[in-house]
Length: 439
Image (cartoon, rainbow, N blue to C red; front, top):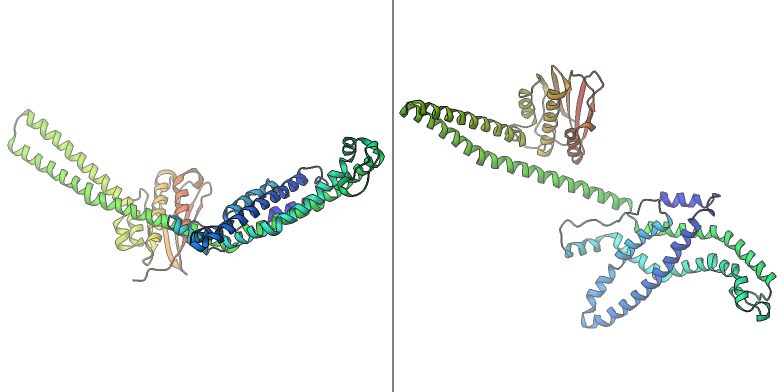
C-alpha cells in the first residue's frame, strides 16, 4: 500500500502535470477497459458452453476450470499495476507452493486458498462493473476534452464555415473558426483540470486491485512459515545425508583400510621371518612405508568421520561433544562452565559445529593462548559462548564458515553474534530457543 500512498501524494504536487503520471493513469485505465471486454466475452462464451455440456457431464471439468479462471487474470493484473507505479516493487503472489508435486495437489491447494476465491470475485467484478467504470472515466476525463481540442481540425475537414458546421462531442454547433478556437481552448483547460480526477481514480482503482489480489498478512505469515518449514526440512535432509555418509565411511572404507593395515602388518612379519638379502630388505622397507601410509590414511579418515558427525555427540550429548572438541583444540580450552541437558538433535548438532568452527578460527587466526567455553540451557534457550584472548578484529563477513553457521542457526530461529574489537578479546555467542529433550 506504500506505492498507492506515494502515488496519491504525487497527485497534489506541481510536477504531476509535467510528468508521465497522467498518461500512465490513462494507459492503466485504457488497458483495463480492453482486458475487461475480453474477460466478459470469454467468460460469457465459456459459461454458456459449460452450461450446455453439463447435461452430458462433459461440462463439469470446464466448470471446475472456470473456478480457477481468476488465477491467470490476477497474475496479469498484478503485473499491470506496474503501468501506474513503475518504480514500486511488484505485487507478490498470495499463493503457496504445494508440498507434493502433481496437478491434483496443486488443484486441491488452490481450491482451499482464500486468495483463489478473491481472484475469482475480482474477475467477475472486472467483467461486469470495473471496466465500464474505467471506460466512463477515460471518456469523460480524456476523450471528451480531446474531442473539444481538435475542433478546429474537425471543422477544417468538414469544409470550414461553408460546410454547415460541426458538433464537437455532440454538444453544440460550431460553424466558424473563432468558435472552434474557443472550443479548443475550453477543451485544453478541461483536460488539464480533469487529469487530477483521472489520476485519483486510477490510484484508487489500483489500490482496490492490490487489496484484492495481493497477499494478506495472514497469507504472508503462512508463506513465511512454509519457507521456514522448508528450510527445516532441508536441514533435516542434510543431517540425514551426513549421517549416511558417516555410516558408509565407518562401515565401508574404514573397515577396508583396517583390513589393509592388518594385511600389510602381517606381510611385514612374513617377510622378516622368511626372506633374507638386499632384496628382502628393500621389500621390507616398502611394506613398512605402505603400512605407515595406510595408518596415516586411516587416522585421517577417522578424523573425517568424527567431523562429519561425531559419535560422542549422538551417544552422550552436547556437553561431552564440546569437551571432546576442546581436548583436540590447538589452543588450551577451559570447559568447566559447560553443563547441558540432552537437547533436540538439530540443536545439538548446530551448537557443536558452531563450537568447532570457533575453535578452528581461534587456532588458525586469533593468536590466542587460551580459550574458554560457557554453555547453559535456561528458560528454554541454549546459549553457548566461546571466549579467547587473541588479537581480535574478527569479521564474520570475511569468511563463509561463520556465515554458513548463521544461516544454519536461522533455520532453528537461532542467532550467532560475534564481538571482536581490535586487540581482543573475541566472544562468539550462539543462542537457540529449544526445549530440553524428554527421555
